[in-house]
Length: 163
Image (tube, rainbow, N blue to C red):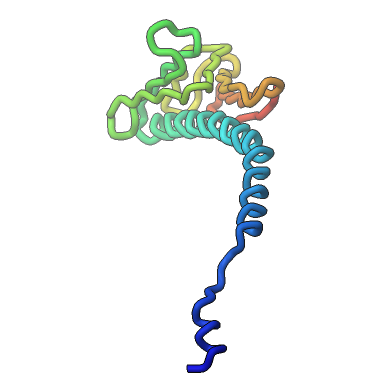
């Protein structure tokens, strides 16, 4: 074996200490500046997910009432409820009572009713719209709000706003 080949085998490719420190510094900057943005995105996601779940459950309640030709009711406990705040209860298509509690930091606000009843035609039978608001604080200057509206004919829609 020649001297040159033996020397080449002893050195192995890798990273030097300055290269490693530069990469760690860049990663540190990404965590420092990107961390708050990721945290806010996660909080916003939790609020949106709670609103989407409630919206889906209201629509399922309507479909269940029409399919089974029987009225179905959802009871909504808003954030001020003393015993079970920020949760709602309904009977699913299998006849089982389901209780859903929204995550910490997300609030349910009911502005028109604490129950939603869907009749056999898929409507509410009420004279006006029923609204339920899901909201939460994303940061010190931004709160997200999703307003779920149920019309007397049973149309269910949602609107997003910040406050």
